[in-house]
Length: 120
Image (tube, rainbow, N blue to C red; front, side, top):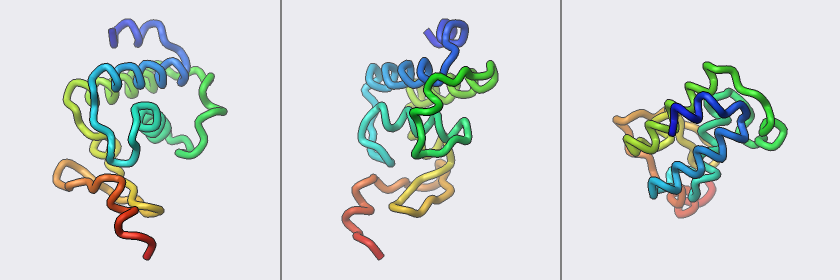
């Protein structure tokens, strides 16, 4: 399925839909920054393409370069097959307005922890 996606998909919208479908199909857990497949897929795509994290709509119909498409498909496959949290794939986690470098040596707090802690 990933090989077919690499050949047929052209836009960010194509990859977003594909990622959401694969994430839901895999029954992934969400909670390291998002609580659903769409938000997590959007974050992974925007981060990987170095686009503003709060601006998806203007880019949905943008055509992707072959290298961009392959990079995204590789990350989507790792998220699905290896069940690696997106925070580890992007090396970034957010707690409120603060972002942190993370990797597999770090336990990423669940999204609700920030709400429990309250504002500083």
